[in-house]
Amino acid sequence: MFENLTERLSLTLKQVSGQARLDEDNIKESLREVRMALLEADVALPVVKEFVDAVKVRAVGQEVMKSLSPGQAFVKIVQSELERVMGDVSSGLNLAAQPPAVIMMAGLQGAGKTTTVAKLARWLKESQKKSVLVVSADVYRPAAIKQLETLATEVNATFFPSTTEQKPVDIANAAIAEAKIKFIDVVIVDTAGRLHIDEDMMGEIKQLHAAINPVETLFVVDAMTGQDAANTAKAFNEALPLTGVVLAKSDADSRGGAALSVRSITGKPIKFLGVGEKTEALEPFHPDRIASRILGMGDVLSLIEEAEQKLDKKKAEKLAKKIKKGKKFDLNDFRDQLQQMNNMGGITSMLEKLPGMGNVAQIAQQQVDNKLFVQMEAMINSMTPKERRSPEILNGSRKKRIINGSGTQIQDLNRLIKQHKQMQKMMKKMSKKGGMANMMRGLGGMMPPGGGGMPRM
Image 1 (tube, rainbow, N blue to C red):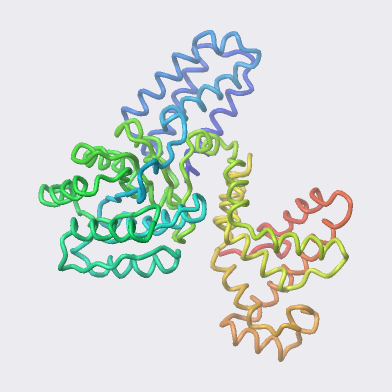
Image 2 (image 1 turned 90 degrees about the vertical axis):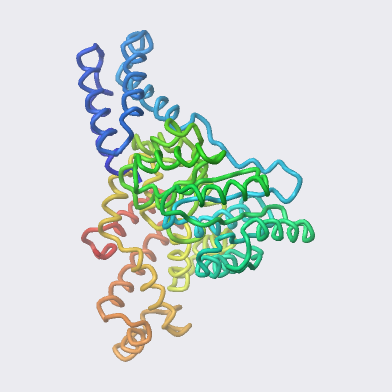
């Protein structure tokens, strides 16, 4: 997300940050570039105008003129205004209610609402340690009810069954009653998607909202629709009292117009970003961290939080002890590292959160297909325990059996073996003095292109 905007803004701000003195002329040129970058990112015109005007007022004032490094002061102003446009502070869920706290989800058809229900259930269970019940009040699509049941099983949430013959209000009330009996903390009610905001459907959801009185009413919108996402949320908010917005599919949105427009246009905070297809791909929205990411400064706090939640600490400690003792880094260990990286959203997701690594993340995204990680794991799984411990025994007949078992080609297997050797060398360096520096040099060898690094798509 924000790749195009980050590239444009980083270039503009780099030119101005080195200026020893700022005047109205060079500020004017920089602001013109900022304006164009925001418009190209599909940020709503009123938001762009307000943003540029606010930066201009502060930039030509004493704040910059009296600064020892005016260029850096200008960058800081842009960052703080980005934060203000997106909401200043993170706005979490309000679950301060007599259990169960009810969350109602609404959205247009195809926005990714049902998947977001499952993602939110998982986030509540893993991050907030809440028990969760999910229910579908979508009586128009039997497939939606079945989809939610499947997803609930995947995220280990309680599923409350419903049918298309029932009324949405009856379904929701029955689910809440069940949650009370079972002492469940949170109930998430999925509602029917809409092709547009029509009176009948709005009447139905208003009736449902009045009956269950949710503590949170979240509107799920497709980030790829840009400023239209903000306008849709605004129209919906006029009919129903929303408490926040979830931007789904934000990983597929390289512009970021929705994230920068929603708060200003709707007056409602963005609470979560959907950052992938998997059920763990949901991030709380932090305006300060997103502003930092947009300006190419990274988002280390989010990376640390992800690592704490998603990495298997026991496996990491076990590997560290093994390497320290001088034992060999085998293909079982390599498979574990691939799985850990996948849990963190892949190499691209990790790199874009590191300061100054935005361009590297873009290169990685273009040249590394995450499906290759699945393919690599399949090849390792097709090996015997002995082969995984000692890959040097892999001869022609063994290799043939492995590629047949994993549905791959001989060049795929040879590349895997080469990458494992690189990782093995890297781990060996880590066990010696200056381990981290050696590891970073080793990672350079793992990155595309050339040197037997990650294969191109």
